[in-house]
Amino acid sequence: MLNSSRPLRFIVAGVSGLVLLFVLTYVLASAGVAPFFASSSAYAICFITIYLVHRYWTFSSDVPHGQALPRYLVVQLACALLSGFIAYGLVALLGLKPFVMSVLTALAASAISYFATSMWVFAKR
View (cartoon, rainbow, N blue to C red):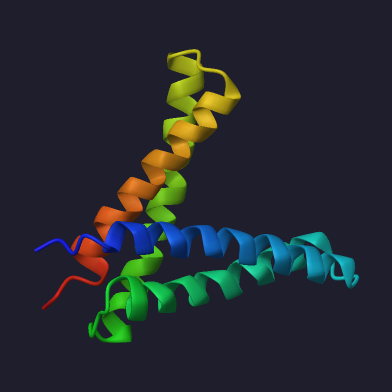
């Protein structure tokens, strides 16, 4: 059965991850770390952090890390790839403006991520 607070916790975790990514990237780059490494390092830290937040808070999962973590990686990579295709379609095929495309792409990727994470990554055994 769907826990009614899960979508809200998923959104809070995602927004928190976005803020953490921004802060870490800014701090590392301001400290003199090359932009590529500042952003990549911040992303890696956020990936693990949000995985753990989703595991323990959003979904309260007991699925073993050896199963859940690779699945989470697959979902995130799939969302990144799908976001590219969705963005392309919205602009190239439908002629939408970048702002509208950005909003719709973010919403679609978030929805895909939520359902894949809840129904596959952290699904009860």
